[in-house]
Image 1 (cartoon, rainbow, N blue to C red):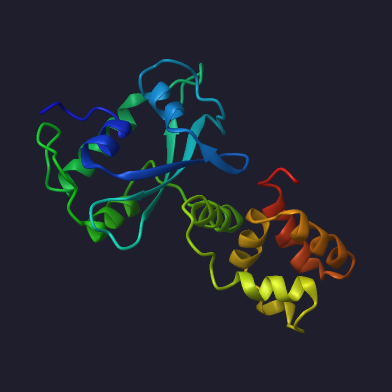
Image 2: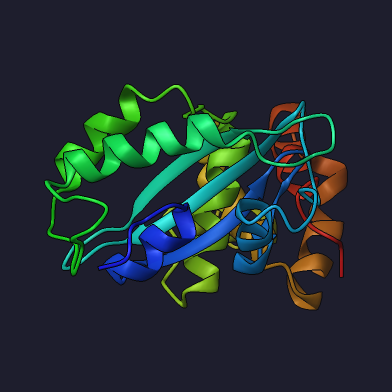
Length: 215
């Protein structure tokens, strides 16, 4: 068996279904090729943030019912290339946690609790601001064809005026789901509602809108 040297190796060898997202200035999809290039010293990270490659990784291992979400900040050098030692230490701990070695990994058992504990004690892990977390969840469900959170419907009803609601009960996740799914019809609804939105709703909405290109 070939050893696992990179995060990409880990995804491939364990059969993980992994999706990557940039978590720097805003949440946006990150092609796997960008990580491969970074880990093989083939180029600088395209969207560095404060000297780091900030990633949101949504992955499913084995028979996990719900995907794992990792927030990793990989250190970069002055040229925007990977500083490998922290990544290597994380991989070693990850493989030990899974009860596997780098030379003998055929499949990934369902060790979700153990991996969650590893991420809680991980120097590469970071906690994004709440709008970033909400936008990542919204993008991940949209990209994988999963239904949005139940918070979307109240937001749609509130903005369209179909149902009178107390704006204080609107969830940030619902606003993020609305923004990710913004099409021409939703944009027209939003334009009509904007002048009357309370400041708190408008501010939360703007935090989400920063992460997309308007249609």
